[in-house]
Image (cartoon, rainbow, N blue to C red; front, side):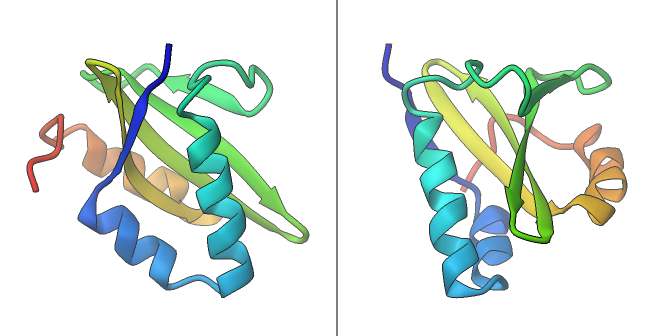
Amino acid sequence: MKFQIEFSSRAVKDIKKLSLNNQKLIIEEALNLETAPFQFKTKIKRIKSIKFPCCRLRIDIKNDSFRMFYGIENNVVYVLRIISKKDADKILKHFKKLEFPPKE
């Protein structure tokens, strides 16, 4: 089954803040979700404290570590945020109030 990838406006802002090399690698990881949004057992974790089906993909690039948070509904993967590992816990608190799927 093939999934469609949609980036929220906030995820696009997150990507634009990164270097071009990191942008390219993160977008490649996002595109891998089209065919297997749950396949990478060691890199993907389900977030249980959120009311909609939300997952976190770990992306390690050299010395940097990023987290891509996404939700899935009707064969669409909504990329919600792409942030550094150190900011991940702060963002999860905001997801509890987030409307899903995002309306943009």
